Length: 108
Image (cartoon, rainbow, N blue to C red; front, side, top):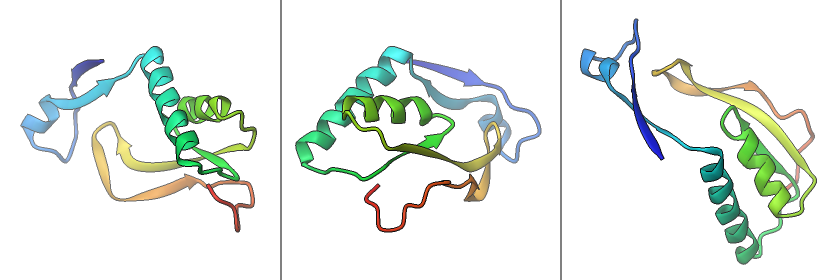
């Protein structure tokens, strides 16, 4: 895993925070490994979901991988935003694109 300092302009953060925003870059192999670990934990717990929800943007690939490892077909997605751009965080997260499937009464 790599760490990278990313510079941002016009941020509500202090100059020190603008100059150094800590983020972790995970390779596809890292995502694959972590997805396998999560799928194993879900299997070991005995939990069987009715639906898997992938959270966009960074959760699409892990959601798909976990559903594949669980041999599970019912996968949907939604997008939640907590950032306006880059490191500018909103006061509250908001759902930008809600789940389009009817999930009433389902275990997700």
